[in-house]
Length: 293
Image (cartoon, rainbow, N blue to C red; front, side):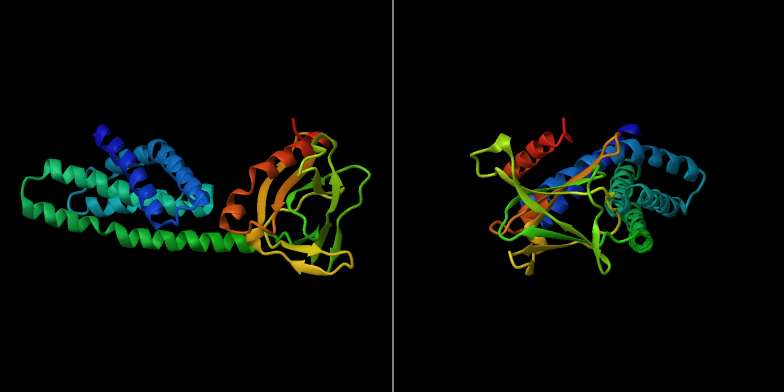
């Protein structure tokens, strides 16, 4: 019994990942995300899915004709509960639960049922899990929308010197700095260009930075990004030209966030992964300002 559950846990994760891979555009960012889903699904299946399967066996062992239906409901229900922990990724948990259920119950019927007619009827019964899964996915979407509507919006405008490409570092809770100004409902972060002594002579010597005594805002991301010329004219930057790096809070109360901007390498790959040399630039900037070990 345990071996069957372990096989179901392994193959449900692999099948889910292969399915996502086949539907992807083979972009490096997407492949990285699919690999992350594979790791999380393996962890979830073995740590959470297998115990849920044992619980289902225990709760349904006295049922006869309705056992397969109740088991399908339990698999999907416990997968849905992960929405409170991993939010939108719970959809992948539901897909894994359905695959786990099909594989485990399928192995059981092949091994334990001798008549072909009985096997076909049993396999048809397994399809009951599909409407359960559809209902659970709908529930996840409702939960996400409900949670999002309760969150504040970040409403931040980043002003970046025209033509700049590279990392942008924003330092929060900085002493002796002004608080973030507001323009109607948006908070304004006017970055400026400075040169880093440790990168002198390189093509990433110049970096963009802004420091403020304000705290970082969290919530639904509604930020906008603009290039600003010398006359103060703004031109909006597309989302595919911006890469979001880490936002970190330290034990000392300091916070920082790192972004990257480009006007020559815009696209999904940059938006997902950014550029390594801009990451290296940001690390040097943070070391210089004493925010990174």
